[in-house]
Amino acid sequence: MSTPVVVLVTFPSLEVARRISSALVGEGLAACVNLLPGAESVYRWEGKVEVATEVVGLVKTTGARVAELEQRYLSLHPYEVPEFLTLGAVNGSQAYLDWLSRSVAPEKDLK
Image 1 (cartoon, rainbow, N blue to C red):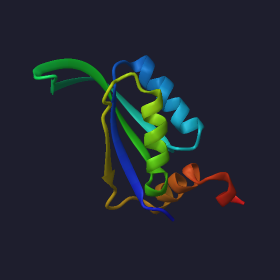
Image 2 (cartoon, helix red, strand yellow):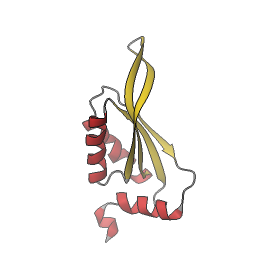
Image 3 (cartoon, rainbow, N blue to C red):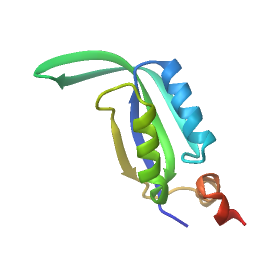
């Protein structure tokens, strides 16, 4: 079983978040994406401090799928530099971790 990870991402709107998240889950790159609308982000962009309302996404996948997930996410995202930060999962319920691994396993691995 590949190591479970959580990828922290942000989106400019709930509509964009749902569209991209549905693609990632539908393509088997993510087992689940939790969308947390209404986040306020304060960040530096092009030398100025900016404030924006965003949707935070918590993407559950495995380390084996991160590179492909990142490539697909970046291809779908409208930002010039979208957030994509991989966090290791230290522990979790075995039943959940098994489900997560099955959900993102390439089809050839399921046979």
